[in-house]
Length: 339
Ligand code: AHG
Ligand code: MN
Ligand code: MN
Image 1 (tube, rainbow, N blue to C red):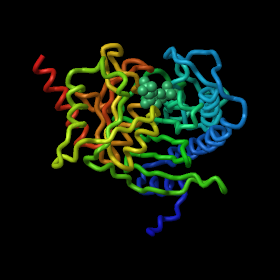
Image 2: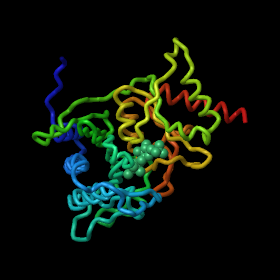
Image 3: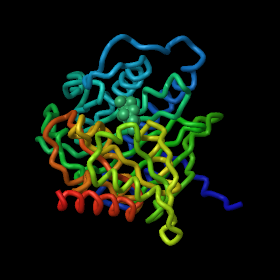
Image 4: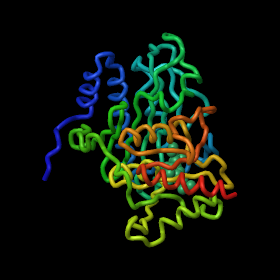
């Protein structure tokens, strides 16, 4: 059996920064603080089945969806872990309408943090994998002033780091600082994330597709044709494909990272911008996927090049194995031309 390098997440981050003499080390601190929040959330997620914290809070989040207690726990924990390190000037969370300021008593820094505290929350009660997603930018407003909405609304290409944590059969922390995508598994006995995959490479083509097929009726004509194409038999192109849909973006994308495949949350006639949020879900995932050799688009354009207009903006997404994403883009463009 191949032996992995015995490497902790903190050491990996520091060694990565060492290769860039211009780095100040601040990003390492940020990622370290995020990994601490991830451990605390992971513990709480594991306890969720035992203690009576499940069920709805009765509140709706800013997207009008029911919020479960664990979402708010993760949201609060991230803020508590991140607001006093002196490295951030502003934050934004999927669970809060407005940007989150750094309390006046703390120093402000040069970074901006956006996060989806708990992704796939409809799966909590069923003990299915859920996750946390984060995205980090450098501020564009002057130093030593409070961060603003402008700092948060940067194009995805400007990300300096991004990552997700999947709370599954193990807890896995996956991050990129723009030089490859790396995964670390939490050893619960001594509480360290240990390197499990360095430089993840998404296979260029796979045979798994991942989409909520219940929305078929409302899809774009090109997408309907593409899905039918995947279901046809053809030995040369390794069809039919298998269908896998967890309903937690983090878990679906994590599978794609390892096995390849295409994850889709398209626009449809009822949801013209799809469901997933550009700033909290699509941009960080696109950055991680591209750093692992994959592709992420809205069907026409690279996710990372979309100009953000609103904090909670939604965009369609097609992400994963490069050739598979190119194929769906082709089907949709062709159907559009025929119209
Ligand atoms: P969140 O729990 O952060 O609101 O995100 C849920 C998202 C995403 O994780 C998943 O891919 C998608 O919703 C599933 O949506 P459908 O139930 O519409 O398929
Ligand atoms: Mn989400
Ligand atoms: Mn969420």
